[in-house]
Length: 445
Image (tube, rainbow, N blue to C red; front, side, top):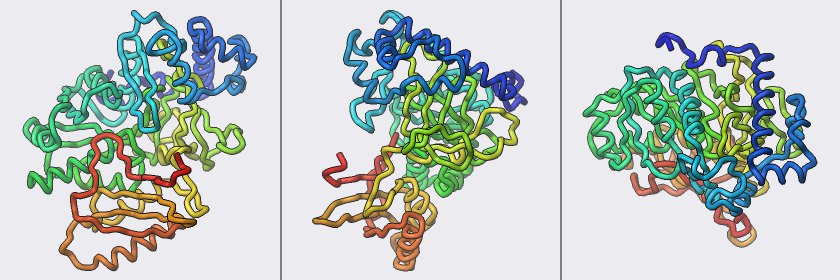
Protein backbone atom coordinates (compact mmCIF):
# COMPACT_ATOMS: atom_id res chain seq x y z
CA UNK A 1 0.00 0.00 0.00
CA UNK A 2 1.41 3.40 -1.02
CA UNK A 3 1.51 5.75 1.96
CA UNK A 4 0.34 8.58 -0.30
CA UNK A 5 -2.89 6.78 -1.20
CA UNK A 6 -5.96 7.89 0.79
CA UNK A 7 -7.45 4.39 0.41
CA UNK A 8 -6.60 1.25 2.35
CA UNK A 9 -8.25 -0.87 -0.37
CA UNK A 10 -8.56 1.31 -3.50
CA UNK A 11 -10.26 -1.44 -5.50
CA UNK A 12 -13.18 -1.84 -3.09
CA UNK A 13 -13.41 1.73 -1.81
CA UNK A 14 -13.82 3.16 -5.31
CA UNK A 15 -15.76 0.30 -6.90
CA UNK A 16 -18.68 1.44 -9.10
CA UNK A 17 -21.96 1.28 -7.19
CA UNK A 18 -23.56 -1.34 -9.43
CA UNK A 19 -20.66 -3.75 -9.02
CA UNK A 20 -20.47 -3.04 -5.30
CA UNK A 21 -24.16 -3.86 -4.83
CA UNK A 22 -23.76 -7.08 -6.83
CA UNK A 23 -20.84 -8.06 -4.61
CA UNK A 24 -22.93 -7.36 -1.50
CA UNK A 25 -25.71 -9.60 -2.78
CA UNK A 26 -23.31 -12.46 -3.52
CA UNK A 27 -21.76 -12.23 -0.06
CA UNK A 28 -25.14 -11.99 1.65
CA UNK A 29 -26.28 -15.13 -0.20
CA UNK A 30 -23.13 -16.93 0.88
CA UNK A 31 -23.63 -15.82 4.49
CA UNK A 32 -27.25 -17.01 4.62
CA UNK A 33 -26.17 -20.40 3.30
CA UNK A 34 -23.35 -20.61 5.85
CA UNK A 35 -25.68 -19.80 8.76
CA UNK A 36 -28.31 -22.29 7.55
CA UNK A 37 -25.77 -25.09 7.16
CA UNK A 38 -23.84 -24.51 10.39
CA UNK A 39 -26.14 -22.96 13.00
CA UNK A 40 -29.11 -24.95 14.39
CA UNK A 41 -30.55 -21.70 15.76
CA UNK A 42 -30.48 -19.85 12.45
CA UNK A 43 -31.85 -22.86 10.56
CA UNK A 44 -34.87 -23.12 12.85
CA UNK A 45 -35.28 -19.34 12.92
CA UNK A 46 -35.46 -19.16 9.13
CA UNK A 47 -37.66 -22.23 8.82
CA UNK A 48 -40.10 -20.58 11.21
CA UNK A 49 -40.23 -17.58 8.88
CA UNK A 50 -40.82 -19.80 5.84
CA UNK A 51 -37.45 -18.89 4.36
CA UNK A 52 -34.71 -20.94 2.71
CA UNK A 53 -31.32 -19.68 1.50
CA UNK A 54 -32.29 -20.13 -2.16
CA UNK A 55 -35.10 -17.60 -1.75
CA UNK A 56 -32.62 -14.70 -1.73
CA UNK A 57 -32.16 -13.87 -5.42
CA UNK A 58 -31.99 -10.06 -5.35
CA UNK A 59 -31.16 -7.35 -2.82
CA UNK A 60 -34.89 -6.67 -2.55
CA UNK A 61 -35.27 -10.23 -1.24
CA UNK A 62 -32.98 -9.38 1.69
CA UNK A 63 -35.97 -7.80 3.42
CA UNK A 64 -37.63 -11.21 3.52
CA UNK A 65 -34.99 -12.32 6.01
CA UNK A 66 -36.26 -11.81 9.59
CA UNK A 67 -34.32 -9.39 11.76
CA UNK A 68 -32.51 -10.22 14.96
CA UNK A 69 -32.03 -8.00 17.99
CA UNK A 70 -30.24 -8.27 21.32
CA UNK A 71 -33.11 -10.06 23.01
CA UNK A 72 -33.04 -12.81 20.38
CA UNK A 73 -29.25 -13.09 20.59
CA UNK A 74 -29.42 -13.40 24.37
CA UNK A 75 -32.07 -16.12 24.06
CA UNK A 76 -29.95 -18.03 21.54
CA UNK A 77 -26.90 -17.99 23.80
CA UNK A 78 -28.84 -19.73 26.57
CA UNK A 79 -28.88 -22.92 24.47
CA UNK A 80 -25.99 -25.35 24.05
CA UNK A 81 -23.06 -25.07 23.57
CA UNK A 82 -22.12 -22.98 26.60
CA UNK A 83 -21.56 -20.01 26.64
CA UNK A 84 -22.42 -19.03 23.06
CA UNK A 85 -25.52 -21.05 22.29
CA UNK A 86 -26.75 -22.63 19.07
CA UNK A 87 -26.14 -19.53 16.95
CA UNK A 88 -22.49 -20.59 16.91
CA UNK A 89 -21.44 -21.79 13.44
CA UNK A 90 -18.09 -23.38 14.29
CA UNK A 91 -16.89 -26.02 16.79
CA UNK A 92 -15.87 -24.56 20.15
CA UNK A 93 -12.23 -25.46 19.52
CA UNK A 94 -12.24 -23.03 16.57
CA UNK A 95 -13.12 -20.08 18.81
CA UNK A 96 -10.02 -17.93 19.30
CA UNK A 97 -11.42 -14.75 20.91
CA UNK A 98 -14.09 -14.01 23.52
CA UNK A 99 -15.71 -10.61 23.77
CA UNK A 100 -19.00 -9.36 25.19
CA UNK A 101 -21.11 -6.26 24.84
CA UNK A 102 -20.64 -3.49 27.36
CA UNK A 103 -23.88 -4.31 29.13
CA UNK A 104 -25.10 -0.70 29.11
CA UNK A 105 -28.53 -1.92 27.98
CA UNK A 106 -28.79 -5.05 30.16
CA UNK A 107 -27.30 -8.55 30.18
CA UNK A 108 -24.30 -8.73 27.82
CA UNK A 109 -24.23 -10.67 24.58
CA UNK A 110 -21.29 -13.09 24.37
CA UNK A 111 -19.38 -12.92 21.11
CA UNK A 112 -17.16 -15.67 19.75
CA UNK A 113 -14.64 -15.05 16.98
CA UNK A 114 -12.42 -17.40 15.05
CA UNK A 115 -8.90 -16.30 14.21
CA UNK A 116 -10.19 -15.47 10.70
CA UNK A 117 -12.91 -13.32 12.28
CA UNK A 118 -10.32 -11.46 14.30
CA UNK A 119 -8.23 -10.84 11.20
CA UNK A 120 -11.41 -9.48 9.60
CA UNK A 121 -11.95 -7.14 12.58
CA UNK A 122 -8.42 -5.75 12.11
CA UNK A 123 -9.02 -5.34 8.38
CA UNK A 124 -12.23 -3.36 9.02
CA UNK A 125 -10.34 -1.08 11.41
CA UNK A 126 -7.52 -0.66 8.88
CA UNK A 127 -9.96 1.06 6.51
CA UNK A 128 -10.82 3.45 9.34
CA UNK A 129 -7.32 4.36 10.44
CA UNK A 130 -5.79 4.65 6.98
CA UNK A 131 -8.61 6.96 5.83
CA UNK A 132 -7.91 9.22 8.83
CA UNK A 133 -4.22 9.58 8.06
CA UNK A 134 -2.67 6.94 10.31
CA UNK A 135 0.60 5.75 8.77
CA UNK A 136 3.58 3.59 9.85
CA UNK A 137 5.33 6.72 11.18
CA UNK A 138 2.66 7.15 13.88
CA UNK A 139 3.10 6.22 17.52
CA UNK A 140 -0.44 5.46 18.72
CA UNK A 141 -1.31 5.66 22.41
CA UNK A 142 -4.40 3.66 23.39
CA UNK A 143 -5.71 4.79 26.81
CA UNK A 144 -8.15 1.92 27.12
CA UNK A 145 -8.64 -0.48 30.03
CA UNK A 146 -8.17 -3.70 28.04
CA UNK A 147 -10.74 -6.27 29.12
CA UNK A 148 -13.59 -8.44 27.81
CA UNK A 149 -15.34 -5.48 26.14
CA UNK A 150 -14.12 -5.20 22.53
CA UNK A 151 -13.78 -1.38 22.47
CA UNK A 152 -10.37 -0.56 20.92
CA UNK A 153 -8.91 -4.07 20.83
CA UNK A 154 -9.32 -4.34 17.06
CA UNK A 155 -8.02 -0.80 16.65
CA UNK A 156 -4.86 -1.92 18.42
CA UNK A 157 -4.37 -4.83 16.01
CA UNK A 158 -5.17 -2.65 13.00
CA UNK A 159 -2.46 -0.20 14.06
CA UNK A 160 0.01 -3.07 14.05
CA UNK A 161 -1.32 -4.27 10.69
CA UNK A 162 -0.75 -0.92 8.98
CA UNK A 163 2.67 -0.55 10.63
CA UNK A 164 2.10 1.94 13.45
CA UNK A 165 3.86 1.67 16.78
CA UNK A 166 1.33 0.91 19.53
CA UNK A 167 1.59 2.04 23.15
CA UNK A 168 -1.09 0.24 25.23
CA UNK A 169 -2.00 2.34 28.26
CA UNK A 170 -4.42 -0.09 29.83
CA UNK A 171 -3.42 -0.26 33.51
CA UNK A 172 -2.30 3.35 33.85
CA UNK A 173 -4.45 5.96 35.54
CA UNK A 174 -5.43 9.07 33.62
CA UNK A 175 -2.59 11.26 34.87
CA UNK A 176 -0.02 8.56 34.08
CA UNK A 177 -1.47 8.19 30.59
CA UNK A 178 -1.10 11.90 29.92
CA UNK A 179 2.49 11.86 31.16
CA UNK A 180 3.30 8.83 29.02
CA UNK A 181 1.94 10.59 25.93
CA UNK A 182 4.21 13.53 26.74
CA UNK A 183 7.22 11.31 27.48
CA UNK A 184 6.98 9.28 24.27
CA UNK A 185 5.71 11.97 21.92
CA UNK A 186 2.71 9.92 20.82
CA UNK A 187 1.15 11.30 17.63
CA UNK A 188 -2.32 9.69 17.78
CA UNK A 189 -4.74 8.07 20.20
CA UNK A 190 -8.20 6.53 20.48
CA UNK A 191 -10.98 6.70 23.05
CA UNK A 192 -14.51 7.79 23.76
CA UNK A 193 -15.29 11.51 23.35
CA UNK A 194 -16.00 11.67 27.06
CA UNK A 195 -12.60 10.31 27.99
CA UNK A 196 -10.74 12.54 25.54
CA UNK A 197 -12.23 15.54 27.36
CA UNK A 198 -11.49 13.93 30.72
CA UNK A 199 -7.83 13.42 29.82
CA UNK A 200 -7.51 17.02 28.65
CA UNK A 201 -9.06 18.21 31.92
CA UNK A 202 -6.59 16.17 33.99
CA UNK A 203 -3.68 17.45 31.90
CA UNK A 204 -4.65 21.09 32.42
CA UNK A 205 -6.07 21.16 35.93
CA UNK A 206 -4.09 18.44 37.73
CA UNK A 207 -0.78 18.33 35.88
CA UNK A 208 -0.51 21.92 34.70
CA UNK A 209 0.07 20.80 31.11
CA UNK A 210 -1.44 22.18 27.91
CA UNK A 211 -2.60 19.15 25.88
CA UNK A 212 -2.80 21.32 22.75
CA UNK A 213 0.96 21.87 23.01
CA UNK A 214 1.66 18.14 23.17
CA UNK A 215 2.39 15.86 20.23
CA UNK A 216 -1.05 14.41 19.44
CA UNK A 217 -2.03 15.09 15.80
CA UNK A 218 -5.13 12.93 15.38
CA UNK A 219 -7.71 11.24 17.60
CA UNK A 220 -10.22 8.55 16.70
CA UNK A 221 -13.34 8.33 18.83
CA UNK A 222 -16.04 5.70 19.17
CA UNK A 223 -18.59 4.45 21.68
CA UNK A 224 -20.68 7.65 21.86
CA UNK A 225 -22.18 10.10 19.33
CA UNK A 226 -20.03 12.99 20.61
CA UNK A 227 -17.38 13.03 17.86
CA UNK A 228 -20.09 13.82 15.30
CA UNK A 229 -21.75 16.49 17.48
CA UNK A 230 -20.16 19.76 16.28
CA UNK A 231 -19.88 21.45 19.69
CA UNK A 232 -18.27 18.37 21.29
CA UNK A 233 -15.98 17.84 18.32
CA UNK A 234 -14.79 21.45 18.51
CA UNK A 235 -14.11 21.13 22.25
CA UNK A 236 -11.92 18.07 21.81
CA UNK A 237 -10.04 19.47 18.81
CA UNK A 238 -9.37 22.74 20.65
CA UNK A 239 -8.31 20.97 23.83
CA UNK A 240 -5.79 18.71 22.08
CA UNK A 241 -4.84 20.84 19.07
CA UNK A 242 -5.57 17.77 16.95
CA UNK A 243 -7.97 16.55 14.28
CA UNK A 244 -10.81 14.46 15.68
CA UNK A 245 -12.39 11.63 13.68
CA UNK A 246 -15.53 9.65 14.40
CA UNK A 247 -16.19 5.94 14.02
CA UNK A 248 -19.13 3.72 14.94
CA UNK A 249 -19.15 -0.03 15.53
CA UNK A 250 -20.68 -2.73 17.69
CA UNK A 251 -19.47 -5.92 19.36
CA UNK A 252 -22.12 -8.01 17.61
CA UNK A 253 -21.40 -6.45 14.20
CA UNK A 254 -17.91 -5.03 13.88
CA UNK A 255 -16.28 -1.76 12.83
CA UNK A 256 -18.77 -0.73 10.16
CA UNK A 257 -18.19 3.00 9.59
CA UNK A 258 -15.59 5.73 9.48
CA UNK A 259 -15.10 9.44 9.00
CA UNK A 260 -12.43 10.02 6.35
CA UNK A 261 -9.85 12.80 6.14
CA UNK A 262 -12.24 14.98 4.14
CA UNK A 263 -14.52 15.10 7.21
CA UNK A 264 -17.69 15.50 5.10
CA UNK A 265 -20.04 15.83 8.07
CA UNK A 266 -20.84 12.15 8.22
CA UNK A 267 -19.55 8.59 8.26
CA UNK A 268 -18.82 6.25 5.39
CA UNK A 269 -20.52 2.87 5.66
CA UNK A 270 -17.88 0.27 4.81
CA UNK A 271 -20.03 -1.34 2.15
CA UNK A 272 -17.27 -3.74 1.17
CA UNK A 273 -17.74 -5.57 4.48
CA UNK A 274 -21.25 -4.59 5.65
CA UNK A 275 -24.78 -4.24 4.31
CA UNK A 276 -26.71 -1.36 5.89
CA UNK A 277 -30.43 -0.69 5.54
CA UNK A 278 -32.38 2.19 7.08
CA UNK A 279 -35.89 1.38 8.24
CA UNK A 280 -38.70 3.70 9.26
CA UNK A 281 -39.17 2.88 12.97
CA UNK A 282 -42.95 3.37 12.73
CA UNK A 283 -43.94 1.87 9.37
CA UNK A 284 -41.07 -0.57 8.87
CA UNK A 285 -40.61 0.74 5.31
CA UNK A 286 -37.14 0.89 3.77
CA UNK A 287 -35.70 4.42 3.58
CA UNK A 288 -33.51 5.00 0.52
CA UNK A 289 -33.83 8.75 0.08
CA UNK A 290 -31.63 11.27 1.93
CA UNK A 291 -32.97 13.48 4.67
CA UNK A 292 -35.20 11.04 6.53
CA UNK A 293 -34.04 9.43 9.76
CA UNK A 294 -34.60 5.77 10.59
CA UNK A 295 -33.08 2.91 12.52
CA UNK A 296 -30.18 0.96 11.11
CA UNK A 297 -30.51 -2.71 10.17
CA UNK A 298 -27.03 -4.09 9.50
CA UNK A 299 -25.35 -7.30 8.37
CA UNK A 300 -21.67 -8.15 8.75
CA UNK A 301 -21.01 -9.97 5.46
CA UNK A 302 -17.93 -11.98 6.45
CA UNK A 303 -18.21 -13.06 10.08
CA UNK A 304 -17.96 -16.83 10.55
CA UNK A 305 -18.27 -17.92 14.17
CA UNK A 306 -21.44 -15.99 15.06
CA UNK A 307 -22.95 -14.30 12.02
CA UNK A 308 -25.18 -11.34 12.79
CA UNK A 309 -27.66 -11.10 9.93
CA UNK A 310 -30.06 -8.15 9.64
CA UNK A 311 -29.36 -6.94 13.16
CA UNK A 312 -31.69 -4.25 14.52
CA UNK A 313 -29.02 -1.97 15.96
CA UNK A 314 -31.48 0.67 17.27
CA UNK A 315 -29.02 3.30 15.97
CA UNK A 316 -30.72 6.30 14.35
CA UNK A 317 -29.09 7.36 11.06
CA UNK A 318 -29.94 8.98 7.74
CA UNK A 319 -28.39 8.86 4.28
CA UNK A 320 -26.47 11.96 3.17
CA UNK A 321 -27.59 13.67 -0.01
CA UNK A 322 -24.18 14.15 -1.63
CA UNK A 323 -21.22 11.83 -2.14
CA UNK A 324 -18.00 12.52 -0.29
CA UNK A 325 -15.32 14.47 -2.23
CA UNK A 326 -12.78 11.82 -1.17
CA UNK A 327 -13.79 9.67 -4.16
CA UNK A 328 -15.07 6.69 -2.18
CA UNK A 329 -18.24 5.16 -3.56
CA UNK A 330 -19.33 3.98 -0.11
CA UNK A 331 -22.46 5.85 0.96
CA UNK A 332 -22.37 8.42 3.75
CA UNK A 333 -24.64 8.70 6.76
CA UNK A 334 -25.25 12.34 7.62
CA UNK A 335 -23.97 13.50 10.99
CA UNK A 336 -22.89 10.02 12.06
CA UNK A 337 -25.03 8.02 14.47
CA UNK A 338 -27.56 10.53 15.76
CA UNK A 339 -28.76 8.53 18.75
CA UNK A 340 -30.54 5.31 19.54
CA UNK A 341 -34.18 4.44 19.11
CA UNK A 342 -34.24 3.14 22.69
CA UNK A 343 -32.60 6.36 23.99
CA UNK A 344 -35.24 8.66 22.54
CA UNK A 345 -37.87 9.13 25.20
CA UNK A 346 -40.99 11.19 25.72
CA UNK A 347 -40.84 13.83 28.47
CA UNK A 348 -43.86 16.02 29.13
CA UNK A 349 -45.28 14.74 25.86
CA UNK A 350 -42.19 15.81 23.85
CA UNK A 351 -39.77 13.39 22.16
CA UNK A 352 -36.29 14.01 23.56
CA UNK A 353 -32.90 12.81 22.30
CA UNK A 354 -30.01 13.06 24.81
CA UNK A 355 -27.62 14.08 22.01
CA UNK A 356 -29.63 17.29 21.52
CA UNK A 357 -28.85 18.27 25.12
CA UNK A 358 -25.16 17.49 24.62
CA UNK A 359 -24.99 19.70 21.54
CA UNK A 360 -26.35 22.65 23.53
CA UNK A 361 -24.28 22.19 26.71
CA UNK A 362 -21.00 21.65 24.88
CA UNK A 363 -21.62 24.84 22.92
CA UNK A 364 -21.10 26.97 26.07
CA UNK A 365 -17.39 27.59 26.70
CA UNK A 366 -18.22 28.78 30.24
CA UNK A 367 -19.37 25.27 31.16
CA UNK A 368 -17.10 22.36 32.03
CA UNK A 369 -17.06 19.23 29.90
CA UNK A 370 -19.08 17.07 32.27
CA UNK A 371 -22.81 17.33 32.90
CA UNK A 372 -25.75 15.11 33.88
CA UNK A 373 -29.47 15.01 33.05
CA UNK A 374 -32.08 13.48 35.36
CA UNK A 375 -35.74 12.84 34.52
CA UNK A 376 -38.07 12.24 37.46
CA UNK A 377 -41.78 11.91 38.05
CA UNK A 378 -42.95 14.00 40.99
CA UNK A 379 -46.61 13.42 41.67
CA UNK A 380 -48.45 13.86 38.38
CA UNK A 381 -45.74 15.97 36.76
CA UNK A 382 -42.33 15.28 35.24
CA UNK A 383 -39.17 17.17 36.08
CA UNK A 384 -36.02 17.58 33.97
CA UNK A 385 -32.87 18.52 35.89
CA UNK A 386 -29.62 19.48 34.20
CA UNK A 387 -26.53 19.36 36.44
CA UNK A 388 -23.59 21.43 35.22
CA UNK A 389 -20.22 22.81 36.33
CA UNK A 390 -18.65 26.16 35.47
CA UNK A 391 -15.06 26.18 34.24
CA UNK A 392 -14.26 29.21 36.43
CA UNK A 393 -16.36 29.35 39.59
CA UNK A 394 -15.05 32.79 40.52
CA UNK A 395 -16.00 34.44 37.24
CA UNK A 396 -19.04 36.70 37.05
CA UNK A 397 -21.90 36.47 34.63
CA UNK A 398 -23.12 33.05 35.69
CA UNK A 399 -26.73 34.18 35.90
CA UNK A 400 -26.60 35.49 32.34
CA UNK A 401 -25.05 32.23 31.17
CA UNK A 402 -27.77 30.21 32.90
CA UNK A 403 -30.43 32.35 31.24
CA UNK A 404 -28.90 31.81 27.80
CA UNK A 405 -28.52 28.08 28.51
CA UNK A 406 -32.19 27.72 29.46
CA UNK A 407 -33.28 29.60 26.35
CA UNK A 408 -31.07 27.50 24.06
CA UNK A 409 -32.30 24.26 25.61
CA UNK A 410 -35.90 25.38 25.18
CA UNK A 411 -35.21 26.28 21.54
CA UNK A 412 -33.42 23.02 20.67
CA UNK A 413 -35.47 20.50 22.72
CA UNK A 414 -38.83 22.26 23.33
CA UNK A 415 -38.52 21.55 27.06
CA UNK A 416 -37.77 23.47 30.24
CA UNK A 417 -35.05 22.42 32.70
CA UNK A 418 -34.24 22.94 36.36
CA UNK A 419 -30.50 23.70 36.34
CA UNK A 420 -28.23 22.76 39.23
CA UNK A 421 -24.72 24.22 39.43
CA UNK A 422 -22.22 21.84 41.03
CA UNK A 423 -18.63 22.59 42.13
CA UNK A 424 -16.05 22.02 39.42
CA UNK A 425 -14.85 18.41 39.31
CA UNK A 426 -17.66 16.90 41.43
CA UNK A 427 -19.83 15.33 38.73
CA UNK A 428 -18.96 11.76 37.74
CA UNK A 429 -16.14 11.36 35.19
CA UNK A 430 -16.24 8.39 32.79
CA UNK A 431 -13.51 6.42 31.05
CA UNK A 432 -15.49 4.38 28.52
CA UNK A 433 -19.19 4.94 27.80
CA UNK A 434 -20.77 7.76 29.75
CA UNK A 435 -24.20 7.49 31.39
CA UNK A 436 -25.20 11.11 31.66
CA UNK A 437 -28.91 10.70 30.93
CA UNK A 438 -30.70 9.13 33.89
CA UNK A 439 -34.40 8.39 33.59
CA UNK A 440 -35.66 7.70 37.10
CA UNK A 441 -39.34 7.43 36.25
CA UNK A 442 -40.52 4.05 37.62
CA UNK A 443 -42.45 2.98 34.53
CA UNK A 444 -39.47 3.57 32.21
CA UNK A 445 -37.63 0.41 33.30
